[in-house]
Image (cartoon, rainbow, N blue to C red; front, side):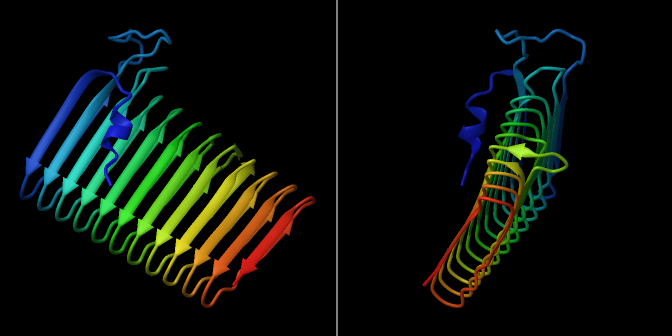
Length: 288
């Protein structure tokens, strides 16, 4: 899956940096830093500066890529796009500033891919196709969006969103050894956040951990060894697991009032379990 259009479409550029490599011992690094006290090069009605854009394209062999962007105070940091095709890939993006956007697309071989963002309304997307994957998104700010899509082979994904209200995190895994974990609310509560793990085929597991109120955590697994666990601490949260087929098990753990926990499993070795602490809670389990 490619996320380039999603992230880059809303960014106006002040500065652009690009690197393209084809073959052999590649490596690329781009650093873009705004001036803390200087006026922005382009002014918008909200008083922010237009962001920078960095692109890195690498095809074949021992790839590696890093990009670092830091905006002036109150400014839009910009966007990063890294595309790697084949061999020992690796990619890391660090962004500090509002409305940052990052895409990492990796196709084939050893993969990895990490994005760290600090600033409101950030978007991070990692797409990995084939081989040993990994995929990590870390975001600290409100209204952030983290996307990880993995297709084939060893997978694993880790998304952490801390100190953020209205954060969204989606992890989709199709095929092979899967994994996935999403944690929202680290050190401080989060409100109105949403987390979803969707897994299709092979050794699955999942994990959603949320701290705060009115959050929603969902795990959907279809086929193979399954797993799942939704853990929520706070009020009026919703935790749900749906699995269809193979070795299933599932667990929803909630601490707080007025929470809803639901599990539905269809086929094979099901187990299920809902643990709630608090008043006004609802627990539903349906296994066929």
